[in-house]
Amino acid sequence: MLVCLSAHQRTTSLEALERLSVVGADAAPTLRTAHESVQRTVVLSTCNRFEAYFELADDHSSPVPAMDAAMERMASLSGLGFRTVRDSVDVAQGKRVAEHLFAVAAGLDSVAVGEDEIAGQVRRALDIARGD
Image (spheres, rainbow, N blue to C red):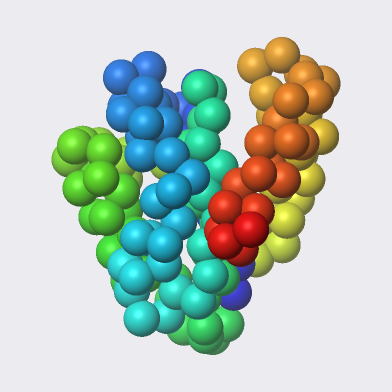
């Protein structure tokens, strides 16, 4: 199962977004160990967004325990409270994750619609997650 936790300029306070963005894409290995069902993670961190993409082992169980554990880890890394993180992120799962990622990579979900830097940022986030 694919799950995405997304904090961006429309839903997150500037203070919380700044603290999450500082965590950066290097948080992927730490978030991968947040819960036993997390198999892979990719973190996209820019000045206007922090997104963590997760592949979970079991497509038939609830992603809530794993995402709660991931949000606890995000709170710890950013110095924010769990409730602040939980209230700041949007959660998508399954097909909605792929749709969201394509919109992000195409620049359709950016402050400046159509900006082309985001595609490179997505590529670098994947490279970091792969250890390239």
